[in-house]
Amino acid sequence: MIKWAQPQYLYLLLALPLMVVALLWGRWLKARAGQKLAERELLERISANYSGRLAFAKSVLLLLGLFFLILAAARPQWGEKLQSYQGRGIDVVIALDASKSMLAGDIQPSRLERAKVEVASLLDNLSANQVGITAFAGDCYVMCPLTTDVDAAKMFLDIIEPGNIPKPGTNIQRAIEVSASLFDAKENASKALVLITDGDNLEGDPMQAAKLAAEQGIRIYAVGVGTLEGSTIPERDQSGYGVSYKKDQKDQVVVSRLAERLLLVMAKAADGRYFRSQALNLDALLLSLDQLKKKDIGGGDFVQYQERYQYFLLAAFILIMAGIFTSDRRGKWFPELKLSRFKLVILISAFCLLPSTAVQAGVGSDMRSGNQADKKGNYEEALKKYQEALVFEPDNVKIHYNIGRALYKLNKYPEAVSEFQLSLLTKDKKLQARTLYNIGNCQFKAQQLDEAIGSYTAALVMDPGDLQAKQNLEFCWKKKEESKSDSTKQDQQQKQQQQKQQQQQQPQPQKGQIGKDDANRMLQALQNKEKENMKKQKEKQQEQNKGDKDW
Image (cartoon, rainbow, N blue to C red; front, side, top):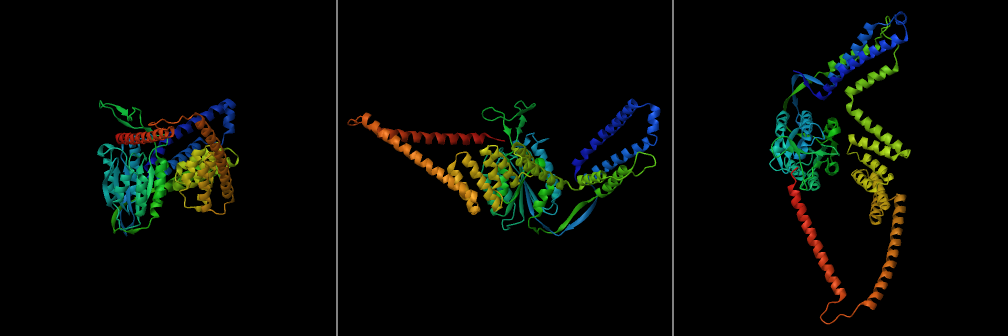
C-alpha cells in the first residue's frame, strides 16, 4: 500500500485535464487561423515537414513528465523498514486549542481541523523524540503524556473537540502550566512546547505563564491559527436544527480574530518562535526544534516507510527532457538548445526539491521590493510589500521594523509605535537602539514629550554614540522647559486674578457655616470617592461579563 508523505500535492493532478483541454483548444485555434491566412494546398506546402504525430508525442511526453513530477512531490512511500534509534532527542508537548472559537471557518474547513492536520504532520516528523499532547479551552487536560509512540499519540487527535472539554472559554495560562507539568522539572534543556491556538484568550495571564516556562528551560513555539480579519463562530441553534452564530451579552455576533501580537510576544519571551498556520512551513518549525540540545531518551525500534519518490522523479526528468528536446519537425529530433529550456528544467526541479528555499526567496524579494519603493518615496507600496513578507515570517523583527518605518512616514504614529515595539524583541543591541530612537520620533510627533525623552534616553543607553538621539533628546528637554515656563506664567496670572476676585466677592462666613474652600474640598473628596466606587463597579461588571464568555 502506498503512503503519501505530502498528499496535498496530489491536488495538482486536477490541473492536468485542464492542460489537455487547453492544448487541444490551442491546436484548433492554430488550425483555424491557418485556414484564414492561406489556401489548403499552400498550407500543406509550407508545413510539409511538420508532423502532427511528433507534436502530439511531444505534448504527451511533457504531460507525463509533469504527472510523475507531481507524484514525486507528494513523496510516495511503501515497504516497511524496522529502524533502531540511539535514544537521542527532545521532549515536545503539543498544546492544542479546542475552544469554540477554533470552530471559526476563516481557515477551511475550520481552525481546529486545520490544526489537527498540522499536528498529525508534525508528529510524523518527531518519531525519534518524546511527544505529549494536551487540549485546552477554559481549562487544560492531558490527552497523552510524553511517549515515543507517535502513532499512539496521533490517535488522541480525533477526540479533541470543544464538546469534549468540560470547561468552555480560553485560558492560555492554564494551557502552559499543565503542559509544562509534563516535563521533567530537574532538566533545564531539551524541552519544547508547541502551542497551537488562535490566541483569543479570555482569562488568565499568558505572559506570566510564558516567563515562568522560560525560567524552567521550556521554549514556546506558537502557531497562530486564523486570520487577522477573523470570522464568526458557528454553533447549533436552540431548536437543535441548523447552525447559528455565537453572540455576546449585547446580542452582537462575535467575530473571533487571530491574536497574533500576544502569541508573538509570548514566543519571544520564552526564547521560541512564532508561525502563522496559513504560511506554516513544517521544515522551519522542525529545524527550530532540531536545534535544541538533545538528551538520552532510551533506545528502541520503530517502523519507517521507505521513500520511493526517487523513481518518480527520475521518470519525470527523463520524460520532460525528452519532451523539451523533441522537435515537431520531421528529421529534427533535437533542435538547437536554448538557455530558456535549461531555466525551465531548473524551475521544475526547484518546485519539488527546494520548497523552503522558495519561501525564503519570496520573503527576500518582497523585502527588496519594499526597500526600493521606500527609496522612491512610495510608502504605501513599501508597506504593502513588507506586509506580504510578514505573512511568511511573522516573527521576523526586521520586517516589523520596516513596517514601523513605513507607517511613520505615512504619519500613522500610534500604529508605527506598535510595530516598533515588536521589533524590540530582537537580541541585536544596535537594532534595539535604532528602534527606540524611532519610537522617540513617533512620540515626539504625537506631542508626547515625556515619553519621547524616555525613548531617546533608552536609545542612548543602548548606543551612547548616537549623535541624532543626543540632539533630539536635548531638543525635547528644551521644548519641555519652554512649555514649563509658559505654563508657570499662565498659572501665576490666573492665580493673581483669582485672588483679586476672591477678595472682592467672597463674603465672610457666618458662625456655624462652612467656608467656600472647605466646601470645595469636601465636594472634591466626595467626587473622588464616587469615582472610586464607580471604578470598582465597572471592574466588577467586567469580571462578570468576562465569566460569561465561553468561546
